Each structure stands twice: as C-alpha cells, then as structure tokens.
Image (cartoon, rainbow, N blue to C red; front, side, top):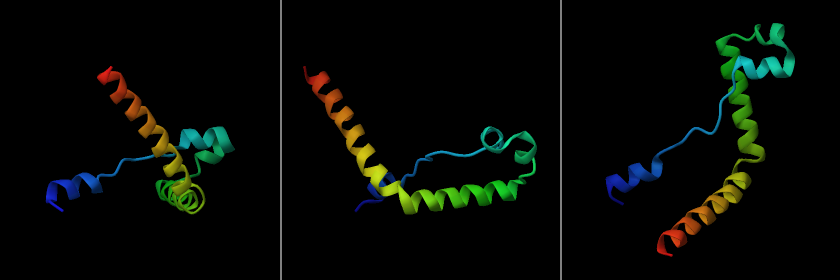
Length: 80
C-alpha cells in the first residue's frame, strides 16, 4: 500500500466530547463545578470505553451503511 493511501485510511475523526455544561444538565451546576480537568478526562475515558464495549461497532456499521446509501444516491443524482 502506498503512503498516501495508508495516511488516508488512518485518518480519524472525532465522534463527540463532553463538557461541564453537559454535566450541569445531568447533575446540576454545583456538582458539575466540582469536576477538575483530570476528572473530566477520566469521565470522557470511561464514556469512550463504555461506548466501545457496548455500541461502537454495531452503530458504526449501521450508520456507515446509511451514509453509504446517501453517497450512492448523490452519485445517482449526478448521473441523472
């Protein structure tokens, strides 16, 4: 595999993030304010691990197929 293709295939794209504002809606402003940056990183790591263990690959396949259908429809529209 050439270097350009390898780099293209290894590109990664962020899925989501979490902020203290998100926490405020879940546990309240006062409790969310207790979270340090290290606490937030730990929470994000735990969420990422949970997501990977539970839903990631199933969701990735289903949603990749959905987006692929949209790509194919765009191609058909261009050719019409």
